[in-house]
Image (cartoon, rainbow, N blue to C red; front, side, top):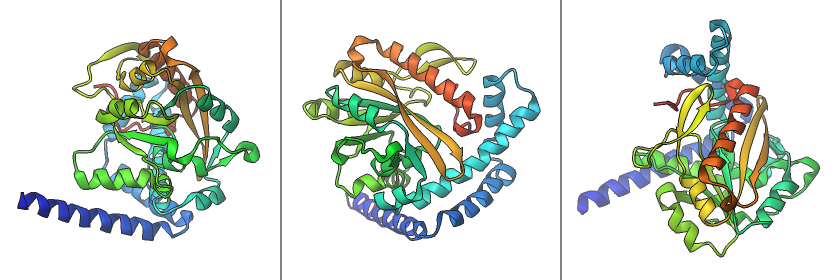
Length: 311
């Protein structure tokens, strides 16, 4: 017991020190972070060679029609974007809604439609991806909108579902960083994936938004559910997120995060269904992966090619 208390204390100190450093660094201009991100991406790609083989295999299997030079170009652009993701995540770690809005880093393109889908169902499930910069999701309500129209979702209604990392310190640092802006308004915004069904049932009488990162390979204990081809490959998926949505009649939207240029994203929530109980989990996931493939083919560098999606 004493050993556990010591470990917990050391971990708390480490988390607070790392978060303090991130908050301190975040005060520097975004251009500085991009400069450092370019250096990091070059090191990751050319020195460490982090998963360069995985990236090329994933690209070759996903785009069998493309030649090596085309795939290499996508790979190079992906690693540059990888550095941008890290740079933006650190900058985001100490930013509030006002700073996010002034920067214009993300523009939400359809705020009225999002509000309408939120208000038309008991709750809303948003299926996100590893396109764009998923580390910025916690600033959702602080970003600019087309026409300066407010998204009619209360700050305290948003929950970001995440998979707990093995390293406890890293898990807490990344979780707090991702929902940094939401934490300022005191929302119960972090829900660990294994607890989401219990959480959803406990809050079923509250209208909430549940944001899930959905494009990972299935976890070992979740079972494999085939949905056919995705990016020219037979693909298995997890059904937990949409299973909850179907049980509780949520509306479901797909989060598209288009990378327009450095420092600019366009976020669009695309409707999948108004009532998930009218569809099967497999049908919803098929629609999700169709939308994801469309987004990837539009901006190929914009997806996280380093992860082993097809195991």
